[in-house]
Length: 247
Image (tube, rainbow, N blue to C red; front, top):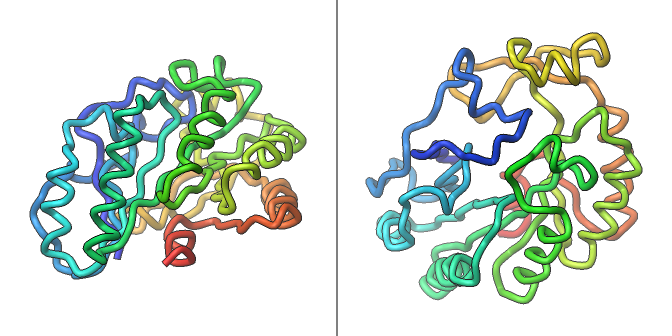
């Protein structure tokens, strides 16, 4: 099973496309708690809609949660600055899970654009520093991936090809995903409205069979996925499938 937890502290990255700020249609999950869940095997997302290191979640709390579980696979991603102490925290948690034969941490660096970060993701890590962070994690035993999600329709395919070339030096797994939008946001009105076709699509990781508006760009995503494979890398549309492949 998947168990998702929402951030207790809202992310300050200020990404223009961020769904976590859609208070009219986004229902947040509960925040991380150490209480055991019903299933004995699970993939957990301790902070599925924010930045993990902005929260008050301690590694000891996650370890306590894992003690009652048979298998736990912890999925954490970032697009923000990480200190050496933060990196070591992830390494230590992964070591704990592996030594106790519980599972592992899957860590991911998120990249949506390389050329327009200041415009689209103003308070996040510059592109070259994200590559540096990938390099740092590639030297550890932590399973690593890159999340190219959401793919933005106004960013050229060639830019994503170049991102894949850069990331291929450090990772072998790529998670791709499209763009959900909210008509009530400034982002939709400035970047999407009247320019790109949208359809309603089910959001599988949200409860109550939720449907959100989704930008139709299947051909573009297919072309990017095909290029990933030419680099000898594995491509996934679901984080669960990616983690299952690592298991």
